[in-house]
Length: 288
Ligand SMILES: [Fe+2]
Image (cartoon, rainbow, N blue to C red):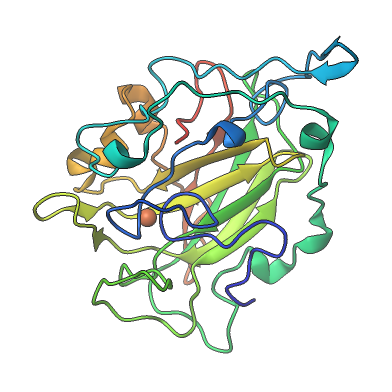
C-alpha cells in the first residue's frame, strides 16, 4: 500500500486529525474535535438514534461531551491548544439524513496489507514487530462491528513520513506508518506493525512524546468520528507528557495504555498488545 490510505477519507497527518489540521506548533500533534467531528448520539458513541422531526426535517439529539473524561479543548501544558481551541461556544449543526446515512464505509475498500504495516513494501521495515488487536465496544460491552479504524504512527526511529516532519531521525523506505481495518462481527480489529519510537515535539524544553499510535474511528457516517491515541505500558515518558496528562481522569489515562499480552505474542516473530476501545459509559476511552 502506498501512503494514500485516504481514498475517501483524507490523508492522515502526523498529528491529530487525518487531513492535516493547521495551527500546530509542531507538525506532530494537534487533534481537536470540531463541531462537525462531534459524533451524533446513536453514532459511534451511542445506541440507536432517537430522531424527531421538526418542521418536516429529521433532527437528532446532539452529542454531549461528558465532564471529566475527555481532555479539555484548551490545556495549559499542551501549548498549541491555546491557539486553536474554539473561542466561541460550539455550534452544533443538525444532523440530517445526509450526515447520518452515508457514505457507507464498507470493507470492500480494505485490503489485507492495509492492516499489516510490515508488508506494504518490498522489504520489511526496521524495528520491533508487534501485533495489536482489540475490540470496539459500546457502553454495555457489546461489540461494535463495521467500524473503520485508521492508525498512523512513527517508524521505529520516531519519525513520521510527512512533509512537515523535521525530526532528524531516519526515514524507513519500507514503512509508511499508516494502516486501516474494519471491525468484524465481534467488534475486533487487528494490526501488525512496528513499535513506534519516541520523538521530540518542541512543546517545552526537552519535550518528548511517549511512544504512541494515533487512532481514528468512523462509524457508518462521517459525523461518527472519534480520534484518540494509544500508548505502551511502562513508558517512562508517560508521566511527563502533557497530551497524555490532559486527560483529567487517572483511570481514563490508564485505559489509553495497551496491555502486553504473552498469549497474543507469537514465538520467534512478534510481541502482542491488546487494546479495547470503549465508546461511552463508565469505561469509556478518552477521545480528543
Ligand atoms: Fe504523534
